[in-house]
Figure 1 (cartoon, rainbow, N blue to C red):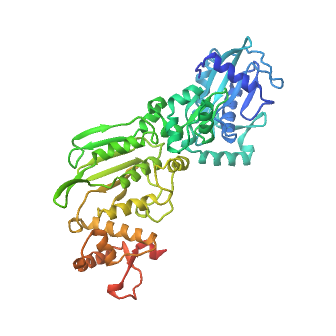
Figure 2 (figure 1 turned 60 degrees about the horizontal axis):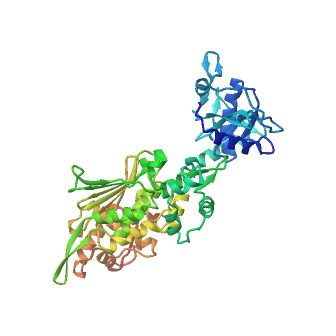
Figure 3 (figure 1 turned 180 degrees about the vertical axis):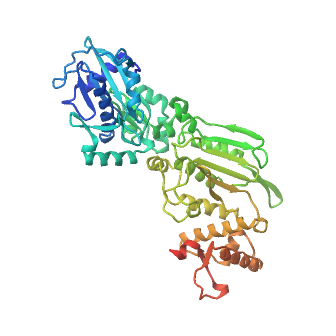
Length: 490
């Protein structure tokens, strides 16, 4: 598949590759030899070898002598090459599994014509040609099945390849890097001084694995850099579909939207404005402050903020659809693509897991979310402090959703809502080294001491439902404490 680059880029690339002391497992040189099946085997071998060598692409170069690496030019023309009656560029893809987005590039260097076959690394499974998987061993192309250790290493690397380190933009110049990434915000969030020179900016971004130097002296921008620091996600093609959607509805249903916003800046660089936008649209409630009626938020913004950050961090970027924040009368729903890696019932006690650890780590360094393992605890604690109903964590098809509910007294909650609130209260108390008591539940719901018997009934209801258990059955009724169901099992 031809995709001509400008001649300057191809010349820079071939000049850099020719400086290598010898062929590598990710670079092969030829002059004119271009046998169709050999090219197909080379694509398979280079795609697989690029994974093992941790390269963003591998190359087969015509017009450079192997051994001397002198640039002598080539007569090979991929556009006119054929296999039988079929063009080479349409014949090759039919025999490669899975499909490989290889590219032929042509250029001139020292007055000589050169051709570069550029091969991206394999994704998710080894690449085969005519049903056979190949790999580069030194400077040779070999069958992968004959090299057990390489095959095991290849599968291990493919299974661990994270989305966040894949490339969102390739071969961009230094000037373009600082144009498309909000680098001032990067340094601001890290509370670091802004370097005076562009070279200092690029060095810091490269050290943080946000950009990588590519083979022609330019830069590749990682998905992590783009999704967090893009000035405009539309510069990164498919990533624009991961822009956060904020939808504000009239009433409690989705029948009538009151407004919608889809900010195009990166998650980190645009987090503050996203937070302000959501905060301005959250429902409020009227309360008496002495003799004055005042408007108060129905939801504590620290809890909302943490859940938004969690949705952005823990989403499955390979799944379709963007993160969504939907604001209704009386509730807020925050949805992220991908099923939860943790049982939604155990968000407070099981060790946290994420698909995007490097992205999460940088968000924590930016101060945009809590340290690992305490974010949801603080969300639940914040909601309890405001005596709000418990949040609902649930799977929603292929998505994960958290729903926050507006103020409602315990007597007006449904049985399901009461059980969820008592269970999460028990979980929070347990991970903090405590247990549920009648007094702790009365404090949680703002119930006076006269409501002790009503709270006791709700505790019995939760025990009967199996969401909490008596910590010590030998204790008297008035002294009993309770733990979540999983605590006694552990």
